[in-house]
Image (cartoon, rainbow, N blue to C red):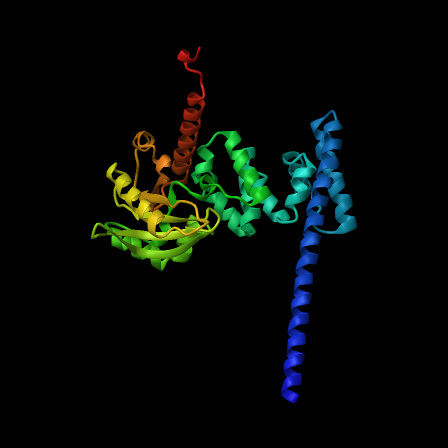
Length: 352
């Protein structure tokens, strides 16, 4: 009888602990949302006053005076530097209707990470992904520092496509393939240097699976290594097989130690057709192939219409180059892709 009583008491204690912790989280989230909205309103009010002034010195005077007044009344958190962050917050996000839904999912620290980003679509990408993937402030900073936006396929699409895909993710939690795949992939955490084989690369990925999935995206789930498939009594092996929960499809990854070659397409098509015929389950979408190479020729990829075959080609880097060089390379790739889209939409003389 005593044991039963102790068990009941322990269960009650456990249940009450859970209630208290859940309530604390809800209170913290409510307080955080309220404070972030308060910062927006403070910044917006100061901006209205400063914009009404005729001299630049007037803005500095107002901010300095307010900082002294508010710090004396409310303590830390209202110095001139903090007030300027609130002003920037309100100017970068002038519409409170855009901010209000996000503050329930993101903290003030999250917003501080994206405020310096000048490109509006890039800023919206990080906010939408951070809310959807539940990134911490540290994770968001790491994604920005690794230039995730420029490496994601969506960055190379026309602006209206980017807006559409981000709206789908935000409103319906539907992630497009262009949001899920990157180019290049950073595999510097594998610690590979000098000469290494495809087996070395594959083994390093498997041993560093957690870091690999972090780089690939949290929706990827590992299924198999060296997945054997048999066609006409001949065996083939898929290097790595994943399942993407949001895309609801298998993703076959082929690892190459060379630049992309035309023959790789046929090999991947065979893998995908086999997976579609023998492994795909009801309710799943057709499998996607990802060929990871050390380099690629864009015209090669374009002429082969790889997207029509559900195949993507991306570079991987086991050692990161100079950051400025990488920034220029990624930005150039985005600009070239957007220019191609722009030219493809221009009317042909034959159309008239």
